[in-house]
Length: 325
Image (cartoon, rainbow, N blue to C red):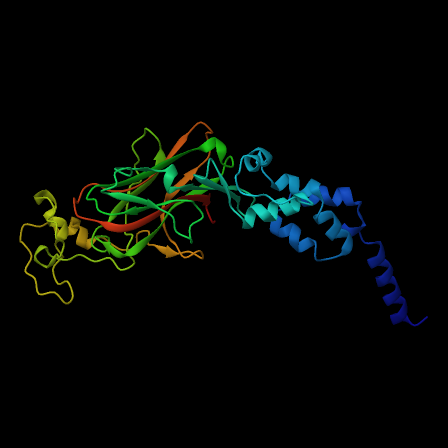
């Protein structure tokens, strides 16, 4: 035999005897897959027929589904299809948030991790004067997942917050909360007024209050250029001033203003609204970690300091989903 042929034969024999994942029993492969992640399992399923069968097994996807998912979907008014496998359940809950709690919340899974996601609808939030028709209107819009959304007619004191118990979320998980909304064509007061947003434990004053804007292009304007038919209370008139050298405005500001701490000098590297795939905007409120299942997490957005008129805000709710690393 030619030396090169002998060497090739020995290499082929070595490859045939080398341990391979697909040589293991399907049950063992499934057990290994259960310690990976949903995206990894989907990639493994494309390698070979034997790996595909193990990757689709219920024993794998049972590890990725929360143990209480049957009781959650059983109470949903959303029509749930019959599933052929637990993988089908996982895929469905990742792509189709289902209504729960009489249509006040939705439940879904994060497709990359299998962690629980909740969306608190406007009816599940606390909205100051939300049940006063002069200030807020409850209506339905076709683009919302919820039966009702809240539409702001007129307020100066804007305060919206919600709560969720850490125990119903995935344990030991970092979450981020987002305020989901739109600004109507008649919206007013959000381009010149910032919000205060925070996430913390209910009953404990949050040390992580941040400044944020709901408007995509926030700005500050001087009092004498403010076109609102309503005059802000005098203690808050300063919030309507612009800083020195504001582009395009010929305005001589008062000399006794502390411009270093004035709202017009707020850096806009704060949370900014982002357009979602569903056509709504979302604003990050903050992060939290589900370490203690008894914690009641409070999610808050408000403007209770400027006293300036606001209208045209459409509130869909607050979404809570795992923090992207």
